[in-house]
Image (cartoon, rainbow, N blue to C red):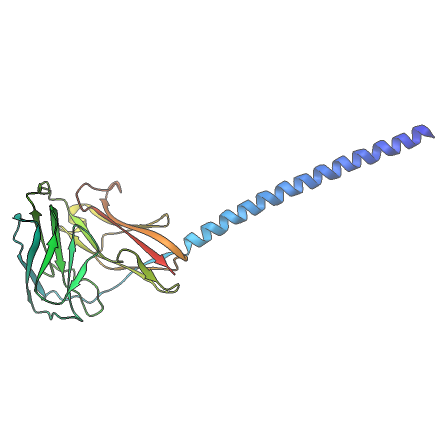
Length: 255
């Protein structure tokens, strides 16, 4: 009888151990499933970002020339005179010319002549015109560039490599949750195909490549800060090309 009770006790212990092991395996499987679901969920959020090219109105007849500064001119520190000539295109507060210095977010100017207070340094000025939607005109003659120095600074090294100027988005630009982000840029060079390069846009680990010089619309970005980078890469190897202004980065926020 005692032997019988011992056998029953042993059997119960074995059953308990098997049940515990099974429960442990179920917990581990559940934990793994939860981790997998979590990773998939994150990937789904990232994949929601979409890229699409926009067709922007152009005006090939609009002409913009920088009269001052002239190329490779040196100025004393302080006030530097800028002067522009615009043809076949209006200019005013609602239709300004845009000016970017050293790749910074372009600023609008409603007059063709103005002064800027500049410190010692080496500068590349890129000026361009806008269409009625506020997007940059991209045809040859719609924009102009000049290199100059202030305070006897060393000039940029001679370089014929193409480069980009990022018009939109501006640094720290804020967007509503459902608002699309427009990436608008100028390409200064012969042309992406003839130059053997592609334009690369990176954001949140996603990459978009194009050889079209046209605005790109980004939609469904998640709430919070984002870092967007545009760069020129070799068409054959996707490696960023050399050059002072081969890439630009902007920080934006979705509110």
